[in-house]
Amino acid sequence: MDTSQAGATVAAVGAMEYGSHCCFVSADEAVTRLAVHSYIRDGLSAEDRVMCLLGRRDRAWLMSALSEGPTRPDDREADGSLVVVDVGRTPLWEGEFTPEGMAETFFAAVDQALADGFRGLRVCGDMTWGRAGGVEHADLLEFERLAGLGLPSRRAMGICLYDPREFSSVQIDAQERLHPLVAGTGRARPPTLQVTDTTKGLRLVGEADVGTRDLLEDALRRAMAHAGRDLVVDLSALEFADLGTMESLYRAATALGPDRHLVLRAAGPAVRKVVDLLGWSGAGGLIVDEDRPSGECSGGVQ
Image 1 (cartoon, one colour):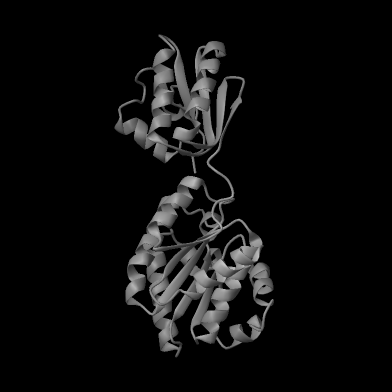
Image 2 (cartoon, helix red, strand yellow; image 1 turned 90 degrees about the vertical axis):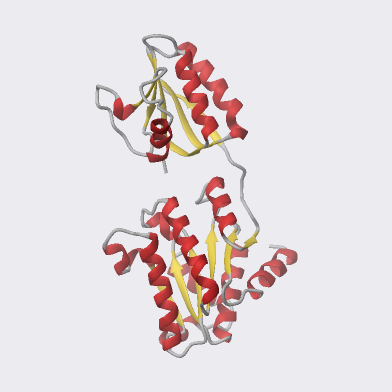
């Protein structure tokens, strides 16, 4: 990590105040460790309670980051100024996750911090806790929206760590638009799509949008010429598809001709919703695999 990155990181977290809601995007562990250390150090110095939500970066990672300075995390946990939460092991996960329930838990933690004599609450969350808990990104986004709405009126702030190796570029885009503050080193990679041949058609891996449209349509033309009666497109590893991608698939289906179908395998809820809303299911040769008479079923798109 160069000195300019270090300076920008410290400045970004140091400028946060009550009501701040920051999306910190970085795949650089050194930068992220510095951000976490600076943010927590500043909070403890200001006599805030600091709550850390664990994700892929676990307790050992956090304690290692904090031990690089004079924070003495064990002592801080003992006096209640540092609270480390493994979100997936909290009572919240005993029932179904809801964005509203998580937001209420967050706001209750602010009230408790004030009742316990702290000046306010700082939350530092490795947002991969959502993935570990099986939370849909739409629900995670809604929780972030609700948290952001409630922060300005409370003595609280939050820094949300988003690792672009764990979230798609589309998901990172949505989070950056939602947070008033964005910091970090940015994305590790641009959106990517891998298209591989299978015995019955194609498998799509990654993110499909306008930047990958030519790749997809070239692969579809090739597969249409060699596939058997049905062309099967496996979506089980597709993280995101824009409307243009769905239109490309539909056009390919209509071009197959009579008695042939383009079958979407492992279509998730978002894909199914688009197909249903546009009336494409079973029309023009496009079939979602759950709709086939054979009853083939598989998982969903994340």
